[in-house]
Length: 349
Image 1 (cartoon, helix red, strand yellow):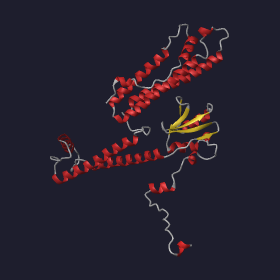
Image 2 (cartoon, helix red, strand yellow; image 1 turned 30 degrees about the vertical axis):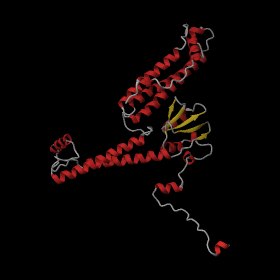
Image 3 (cartoon, helix red, strand yellow; image 1 turned 30 degrees about the horizontal axis):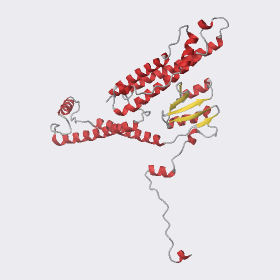
Image 4 (cartoon, rainbow, N blue to C red; image 1 turned 180 degrees about the vertical axis):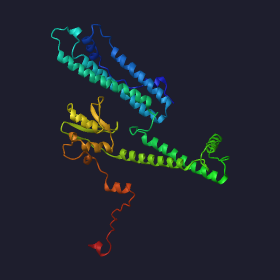
């Protein structure tokens, strides 16, 4: 059930630099700055985002609510950072209207405009978080979803239940030659199956054909494999590293492998990163991709982020112990037998 509107406003508002907002206004306009106007604008935008979040919560299951809350908080935090950065950029160089054309710092203005473009790119990313809020719980199960395993398990339970029902309904039909009276089906379901069988091109139609059982069973195997994969990934401990010119971090909260360069990488490096699945994320100032075994293997191929130790990134990751591997494979683990206390003459020695 959606929370009340009173609860909607118990969100995190992050601080807006009113001093920077005032200086930015003075550097670009003759009109006076209205105290608190930047903060008011920021809060109004966050309130709109909170309303979007509440509407989405009313449409989806409670298991999605925590993710929506996280996205809303991320939006509020990153929006404040972006606005404050925008004020700082606007205050660097006055507009030509304020400063006048004589001795105008053209070079500094061009640099300021480039910074504005970068800030605007990040702004667009932040506004895109609202679309993520609107789509949460409406599509498939993403590996980024903290409740992915729980949702997949529920899906698996439903698939297995459907498989069992289909088999038992077919058995009932073989025994009785009809569906009427089958306790596993509602009257409406019985009528729909009877109509489907009547219109079938098969000479001996069944309530559920073999291809339906086969397809459902294949989906069961696929979901089981995905649960196993995500479970192992959740238990795996990833380790970051330093390279010549930056560092790599494993962000488990956002499920991202992130590459931070000390400076802007050259065109060849950027192309190499893109070809290996990495994308620039202005919001965090990093090149990143989803944190998976495939991401680590991709990092192995990138000479530009090679660990200073000379090892491959995959070699730096914590490997499961032999004991853990044996247990996962279901092998019997033998432990060292207990030493018995000496007796007789041995005890006297």
